[in-house]
Image (cartoon, rainbow, N blue to C red; front, side, top):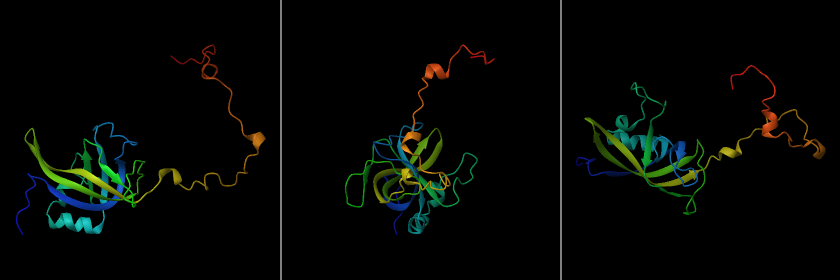
Length: 176
């Protein structure tokens, strides 16, 4: 096998479970990095692929003190531009991707150097949503357990305005 040249960029396809996915126009880019990104906890096949390339330790997310951020190998993939995200019908997907969703990602691994430091970055190009974990579909039946369903006359909207709620005429000894 010939030596892999990460200076030119190497294409890979990896799969796994999404954490903190911000990959669509709807989610927008990450506020801090201003990039579209996802932290992908790798499945076994992807883990083996990166181990065979001898780079798993280089791309596995670590904290500033050098300890691993996740128990399972996880890589962060980023892009300045919105990556193409597809559903299983090969249609463009532009919705939110909840934690726990299963994704297949096409990415480019490329070396970087800045201020005397070197590393290996993973840039996401395309994403296929294999299983969507809809964050709004969480079963919260236990939260509402033992409460009767409200009748129409019990449903009401508070009529207090914000100025009434924060009436400054009451002296509450707060400095504001």
